[in-house]
Length: 56
Length: 352
Image (cartoon, rainbow over all chains, first blue to last red; front, top):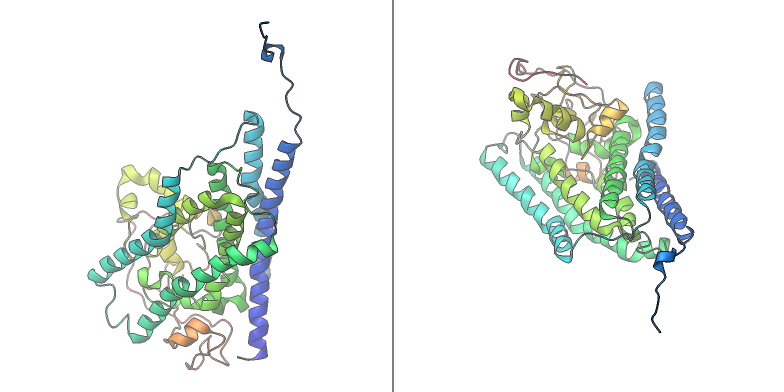
């Protein structure tokens, strides 16, 4: 195995990392955005029918 | 050796489109959840279902491959002329390597390395509904494998890492996992799916892997399960959808053909693994509903098994081979004399 072969392997690994990381970032950032949109969504206010009347 | 300018242009165009396709399931999930309102998100898989998928993925697929291999052996696929000692060793070493080395390595990657690379993110997306997770991983895993595969065909300096898979002069279980070790160990989609499992999409990933293994195994098999769909007119609409959606023996065998000159073989395309849809979308599809008469590489002269398995660490001793120390990066196809292909009256021909 020569230095040129090592360089070839390194280039191949870099290509592999790129086509792994790019989709991962797209998907993870998309899911993270949905999660945050969901967490920051204001809670629905209780309606008058939700109130419970207690008998004294 | 440079990439053909037209190919380079198509790669850039299709990569741009792929970025949108990767985001599509997430966008659709967001729209669906917004329209339906924010309800409690539960994982519908029971413990029993998860147990079944896990065990099927671990042991069931291996048994399925062995069973198909036995059927192929009994039907005479592995004769001594075609499957000599060197070919046997190449196939067996490549079959054992993922089981003995890759699986433990990927397990280590998932359990030990990912918590270091993505600290505190374990199961952070476990709220994703099961079927949306399934859709996300189907696209992520298979589209990534499509690109990994396509680049190894279209980028000249990557070709020799994938050549071993194409040097087999036959289709069957013995050659399904026949790959150079560096091609196998750097399979991008394995690490992408492992990361998504770590982030919480584990149960969905199990189902995707189960279905994917079945489709890709059957696409490499010499058992042409898709033939009845082309033969009987009533099944043609099903065939039309099937051959565009998933990899079938006809389309994947064409990818392994020794020549493209007969109108059946098409090793310059049909890169899809589980889904053939990627080839249809990106214009790399060729559908003929026929099977090639010769498989492999036209100029293959049986490079030693260790060179095929561990190139560039070990080089081939076959003079002029692409895997030889001073061999060409990509060798020009040798002309082949092929027997006649089945006529179109037997199997309808259709080009995509």
